[in-house]
Amino acid sequence: MCTTATASAIEADTEGGGGSSITAKTAVQLEELIRRLDSGTIRLIDVREPNEIEETGSIPTSINIPRMIISYCL
Image (cartoon, rainbow, N blue to C red; front, side, top):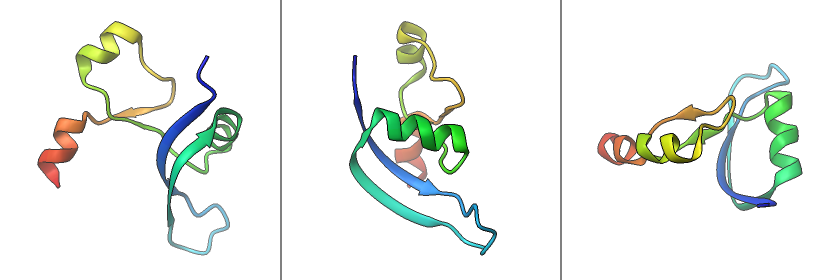
């Protein structure tokens, strides 16, 4: 079982101060990722292509934006 995830996160402002902070991390412990997803402080963006999701299944609560779309929009 994988216990770390490579991630970049945009953290929501949960204190009501307006604005978001952008944090880049190379590895996040699985427990930390689950805790933040459950608390709503981050959103998980799944960059896999549709065929990859069909093969392995979707990640609950994630938003799928295939990497090809991200590359095209940047």
